Image (cartoon, rainbow over all chains, first blue to last red; front, top):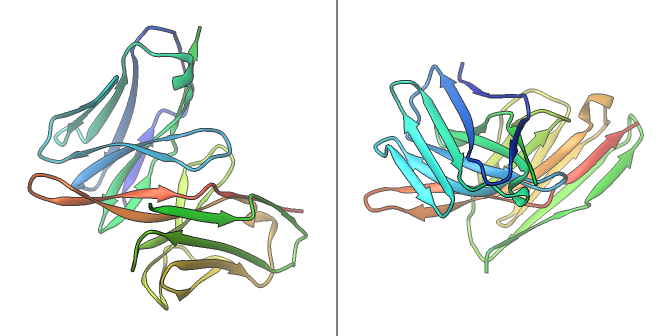
Length: 110
Length: 118
């Protein structure tokens, strides 16, 4: 069955540094992959989508890469700010349904 | 504008009691609708999805059911709650995004219902 893995340990970084979060998947070849941000007690909010034929996608301070050979996506936040602290979820399209990883919590310290 | 409403925000229910969570969307027609559950410290688990009125697909066997009585209304129910039903329930609908050669969908989530079964 499809398995999506995100680092369950929280990522703590200093303000101004680049945060890099990893999403690995197995047993599937998704047509696209998405990243969401979730704040405590709130629903996830869509950030970026990257298609299988795209290597990289950028949006302001965010950058996502998609390596279909490694079955991995990397999510980068450059010049991180305390306001970037949240849980970040990756999601894969599987037969028209979005399946989510368990998320990685990012804590940016001032 | 496209919005999604979900209520209540929090709910505390005794074991064995019934449940009804409601979700409605505005600004679209014939949306694909979803119910997800998130247990504490866990990822989002897809429970049900619906592509139209009266059309419900269940992803995992469980103590819950879903119904779609109207195009923009999605209801999550249970006849008798279990302790294991506790969690954060999220309704979502898919929004189409158009790319240069293909179109994909992203999810727009409601604000969620924190359910505690005691």
